[in-house]
Length: 116
Length: 107
Image (spheres, rainbow over the protein chains, first blue to last red):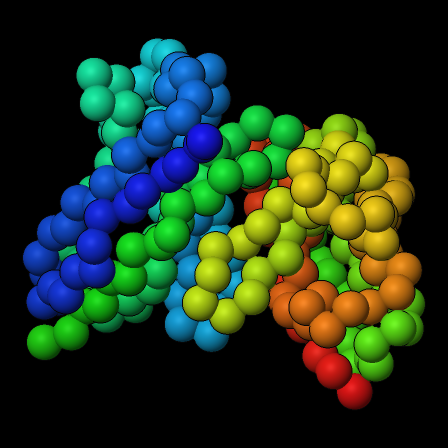
């Protein structure tokens, strides 16, 4: 069965960096794009960007350029989201989701807390 | 950038009633690229509808989607207790974006 398993929660200080992972299984990894979505506490969903799993080419939403890097390792069916120069407002749950006709499978989410 | 505006922000209904949720796009989008999601507290979103009107695998028939161009609707024909949640629309025609959500709560 299709599964997206994300890395565990992170507690970071402002200015630090974090790398989140999302491991896919149960389907042909390169047949589907992977999206990253952010959800701040009590807020809605924000699409951050996606990665083409064939080419490794990422595309970012306008609000998520500069400090964000989406990458992948096809040898282990995993995509990564790295966020640098963390700010308290980066505290949120980050989801990966398989793209296609709608995002049909989602990871369980990774909670990132940025606090001094 | 396509902006999606959902209405109402909150909808209060009773089990058994019909729910109608709206999603308006700031520019015309191809119907094939409009989806609806349900999210419950502490859970990731769940895909309900894609292509504006196609139910995702395992989604009950009481959920239906309609609309075209800039106006889209999610209808829940007869509310079950488990349907009370937050609903989001999403377009993936021009980049991707989500609406701000509609909270469906028990009256």
